[in-house]
Image 1 (cartoon, rainbow, N blue to C red):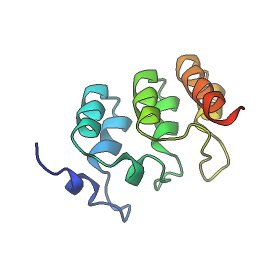
Image 2: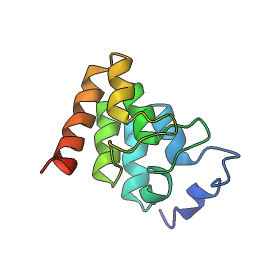
Image 3: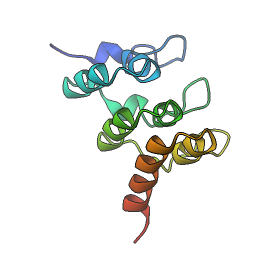
Image 4: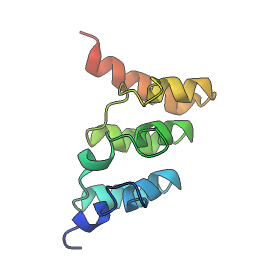
Length: 114
């Protein structure tokens, strides 16, 4: 597939990257493909986008546990707070998105509880 760094060309916030769009549109196969073929998740997953939400937060809010898990396994942190102070777990829980909230909570516990 070649170098996929061009998927991150919109780092100024003027347009979504391919990974952002795949998460927003809930396309787990595309997220998996992008991550597997060199998309750098650290450049987009843990950064806060122009809507003040991490990609993990977006996936959790959409109740997409498959994408939440893919993002977390690629280096995202479910305990990372967006600009308003909420984590992916809190955002999903407040919206009643139980499946995604559980995935985010388990990841946070695994990483942050001794």
